[in-house]
Image 1 (cartoon, rainbow, N blue to C red):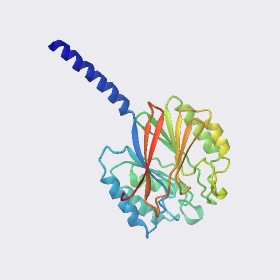
Image 2: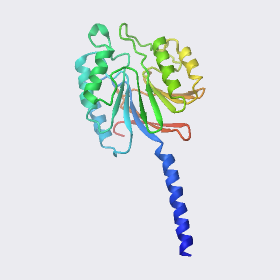
Image 3: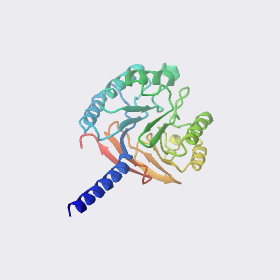
Image 4: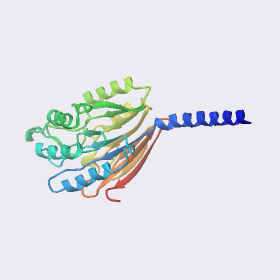
Length: 264
């Protein structure tokens, strides 16, 4: 009888560990988009950082700020943004949006990302497009911002799509989540639609392992499946306090989202 009980307990332990290993591959991250930081709304952003830091240490694997982090391309505003972000207990990853850079104002992509890396640490790339891995998922940050003549239309240049395709080929055996500022979804305001998005969408057709594209920019909450990829556009933080909790389950090939709000 005792021997049988030991066998049962052993089987239960093996089952628990095997189930646990599946869940261990899942991950969760927090997405904040369109902060549009200014001296006037910094306190609102400060409170968000405090709220994130009050969460349990294992609540999320990282935080991503998906563009338009500052309202105007000024170094002092970027510094203020980074001063808040580097207080996070979580690692943070930064994406460039159309409000973030403008060569004529003295804040180009190179300087922007150099400051990001200097303030957040060497784990962060100094390039506007980059790759990082968490558990069994590969995250690819894709840059669609224009720094010479900024505007609300995203533009993924041929060179950017070529770079992306090389990364998709390299990680073709992995589950991938792409994070960028500009969605590939249609939009009621034509002036905000991404240029030549059809070419980007055609590229994705060859890579069904791309689980999701996570973006912002539209200042509204949109989620839509195109082919095998789940497209997520999250509502803006500025003035509304929204952020999104995103869970990625590579084992089940699923992405789950929850739109949250600061203070609620």
